[in-house]
Image 1: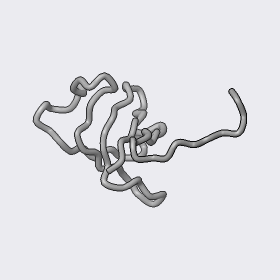
Image 2: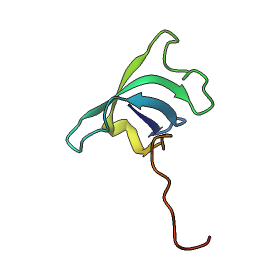
Image 3: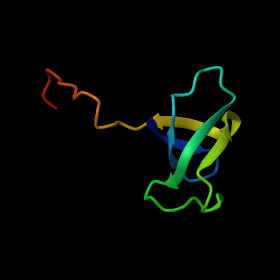
Image 4: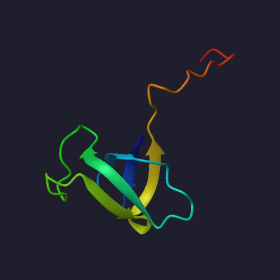
Length: 79
């Protein structure tokens, strides 16, 4: 399961989980548990809805949120 921050055209970004990262050939993203970044409900989705399908033409870009399972990257340079 991956958590994505999805930037929708002319809307606030939403957080959602996906089973697998979208492929370049996908026409839409199937999202589970859509919510705003602060955890509140998305105003255009009914509270009881757990899954939404977003077409790619409505999405500006997608950020893959880091999970706690990823390894820490060690840089040889001080920042």
